[in-house]
Image (cartoon, rainbow, N blue to C red; front, side, top):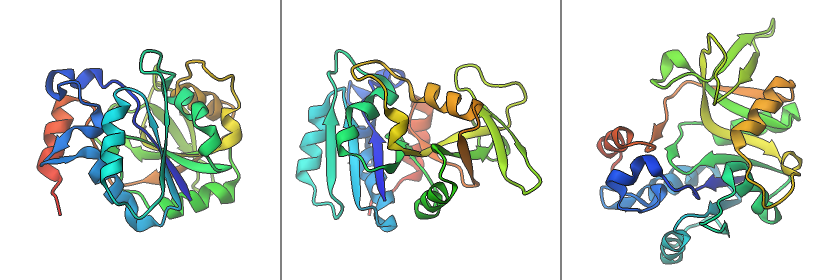
Length: 233
């Protein structure tokens, strides 16, 4: 089982408090957020972790070189003056990736059973498996409309930029996918949400429901909340 962390963005919404430090490297109680993210992954027996870097990649590399982590970590770099987008970052990293892997944003901590999530993805043999949480359980704007079939399985349409009317679920932030999904021309800006949208619309996606809210640091308020929740060892 392999996970890819998307840590290449510029974090514009946090500029007022980040002093140009990349989001995942912002300190929370004297530790970078990446510390808590890696710590959250440790117990799930990942075989490898890959980190997609772009903006201020040297900050990440210095930190990664300073720690002794039990799971092999690789990273790929983008030109920080020509970022490739969340999907483009995956395309740029394909040589490091397995045939199936999990993707997660580098500014979120998820309460998900990664092993069960990945097992379900493999069993369904879908191009992607999206994790979702009901809008009743999470204080974020819903971007996915889901119904249930007679077997109780979710059928969903996702659109981050123009959410469907009556959206009732939220993209939880972990996505399992096949490597073939990213057979797209390199060096082209690609938004991961556009890929998710197309595959849900064409019924080539599966869905995995989560009930525990996530922690994220995408904006100043969320960062303040995270600092109240997260504690060091």
